[in-house]
Length: 388
Ligand code: NZQ
Ligand code: ZN
Image 1 (cartoon, helix red, strand yellow):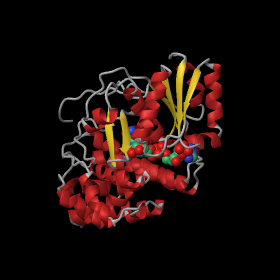
Image 2: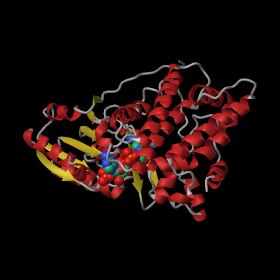
Image 3: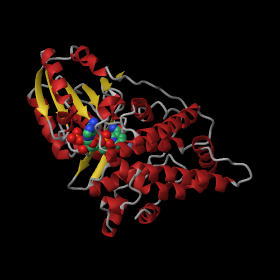
Image 4: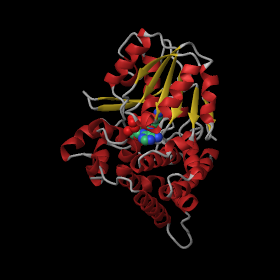
């Protein structure tokens, strides 16, 4: 483990089929005014909405609802939430939904009492929070982003077509998150597999960096093996509790800063994927799957030893008698076969990307320096073209 580090994750997780039983005790820790925020209606269809509102009522809370949080939440929606939170002096924001709703709750929590335009302060200027933060709690209905246990909050600005993440500090992490794997059973298959690939990519973004011997890499290999195994079971039987629970647990550990310890991390697939999202509003996990193979095949020669290790340790490629290049290539072939097996989107055209968007998407892709190759804008464009 290289470098000096500090690790703290303050989110209290309740996990399992009875996890919701703990909501009442958590609510008791906060003041009376609760903002209940959720998405486009899946929680009403599943019956979760009625359960949550009953618990809120029993807890004597004054509830202010903020429905309609869209996938890839926007700045307009953020401003709407800030107004409600300020007007009603909200004591707790309860997010019930997927990563979009959890991200949104965190964005409102830091923005409601912000004196400036939060988009400019947090997303364009990337400044830290220096105002009051409203506590957030989550009831998660989709496994993927890790938003339930981290400080990330991704917001999209439709005017500038920019989709940007701000990773806030541990003072913004959800205070608690309730994870019942059964709540993910109702997810459409498209969303389930997009979430699974999001988890996979969170791990590979952190795995493909550095060359020192680091416990984090071994942990990641275990997480990836578990994810691949469970994904195949969940694909055949979405109501297999064991598989869905492993996927949900893996999602939290893939992006709660634990496996990032001692690593520099890449994040380039996410940077390009987010820019595609800014132009197309496509499902997050699919923006990642659609460019991943072109990206990893391009980067492979720059981090050959790690790609070889990935092939052997995660995909069980037998290295005997093969060159490093051949072993690494076979690993990527197996990853691609798994992605196709899941039915992921494998090209950006299918997400609505057209030739005339490529320059804008390239420009909107922030270039990171933590992976094996710092890309040039020309290389990003070439990866996009290869992903068409
Ligand atoms: O809106 P509703 O009706 O609830 O439907 C949602 C939505 O249409 C539906 N859904 C969720 N749970 C369901 C369900 N439908 C049926 N049954 C259920 N149990 O699924 C759709 C997608 O939901 P969304 O929350 O958008 O998906 P996801 O969890 O993938 O979140 C995506 C957002 O998170 C950001 C992404 O950029 C995107 O904006 N990310 C956040 C990160 C973080 N905080 O660290 C990191 C990620 O890399 C990612 O960027
Ligand atoms: Zn992601």
